[in-house]
Image 1 (cartoon, rainbow, N blue to C red):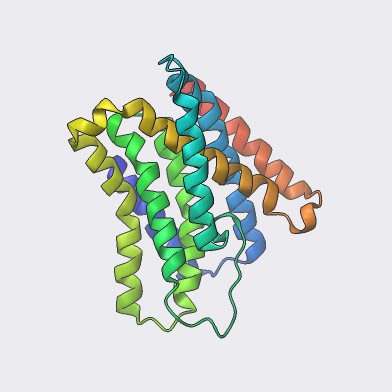
Image 2 (cartoon, helix red, strand yellow):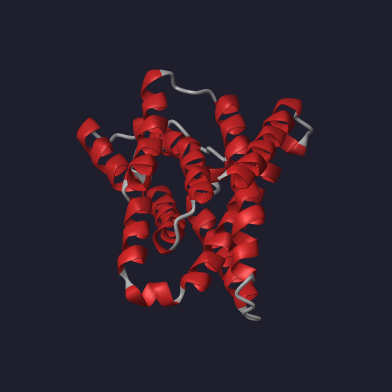
Length: 227
């Protein structure tokens, strides 16, 4: 069921690009909501669970996750948190963007394989929708054929399930469950805070974004108490 939800989130996001072509402001609000929800689940659920292990070096793995996401965002030029720098002359396959987002998707799926966490699953599903929209926009503006776009979107859609599957089937990875979760926490902290603090032009106060963030925080808190 979790695999289907992860795949559907990408299909849904790309479908929005094909059907309604979301405007940048709408994408920014979706990113803000997903970033707030993801950050909340990370702080309310993932971090307490990781530090229950009482491993004094676990913080190093969180920092490692932050470093990994920093490198990935350097490759993607920050597209995953709203920096959509597309130019009419950029008609080639966005390889760096695709590779960085795919690695990110693979990593975020791994905790779902070593531990069942419905809150985390929904946080990732919500997070992937605007990411799929952004990737879809770049693909649609490239010179790629429809068949090629379908193949690459499909590959991206299966990256998180693949990460989850490998983590679930590997006995070695099970031994490092806490460390894997800590790395992903670092990835989530970096991407979610970047979304919340960098997706507003000139860092000006945006009331709509503020409301969307509060809604994301609120829904994440409620879900963490119920599920």
